[in-house]
Length: 448
Image 1 (cartoon, rainbow, N blue to C red):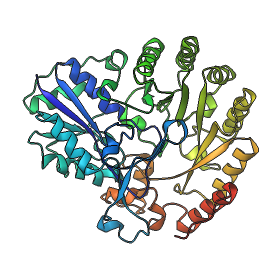
Image 2 (tube, helix red, strand yellow):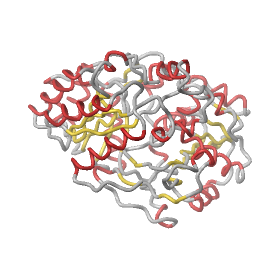
Image 3 (cartoon, rainbow, N blue to C red):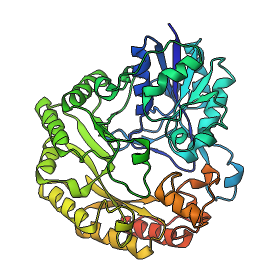
């Protein structure tokens, strides 16, 4: 029996926070490998709830609903970021913990490392280098970063990359390293649960009920990563939730679908089953649901099912709403906010994501979006835009000479874009917006 280690890598960044982050793709890969007959292990360097972690570093306490700060350590900045006046950190477990975990697992035949944001690649590369200095097995790198920038990922210390979203091509990778492989069922998403058994303890659970999104927003990569929209049956979704809630005794479950309301009937069935099971769990939708698709019935069911976090995808006001794909307009946000308030949700539970620094966006676009949210009794979150390679936005920015196609991904970090690029509002406008938000929240403006 082959022994395969899965690793969720460090985050290297100026800021990172655990808003229900779990490496779901890696956990699905783990399940498929198990079904093939391999012995699977996991080291999740971002699992704040690992009972072994406090032996090596002080772990910040949970905040609201199981979220919280990652343990972190200040590290040197990459040369390209030397001028940024902020501390650069390694987020996650310390190297001593990682080394201890590797020694406990002993021999492995293959290591598979996942990835998320393209600009987090330094932490991914460092994780792989750390492994290769201590483990003789080949290392395969996959995940979102690899799917978006396969050519850049090939420069990493990994021996192989897995530049696909679907796990159907997993056998080809296993065969390349001489391991046993079986065909992956085409209906793997329906049949398999993420392999949460690889954890000893978690503070929350994350699930997805659908893959992909039929909308074609110019700033989003999801339709290109998933070629079609796929849903999982409500019975299998709720069965998995009930099973792992019982195993880990958690109180919080988040759904990270990109388009959970696209099939409203499917989601309604999930909600009705959750209500029937009476799980005594807080549910969360942190990924920005489609406001236009929200109905009275769904809002009523979500209230009864005990949803505590509902994020609406707003993005911006003005002409950019139509130019970026027409997914949402002001009237959709107003419609959704009023329905949710009608069914007892408050600004503590409902907020809208508003992007700042989008190409062509004006300061007044964001201020108007904030005003609409406040007038409708919901809160808002400002998300700094980042251009994603391969999207329509990216192609236009490259064609217009605003971005270079071979720009180092580390410069695409949304927290530093205002310092250097001219595709959005710029550093001055972003500071104005942040000051507006701080004043509304009664916070002091920091000196940067």
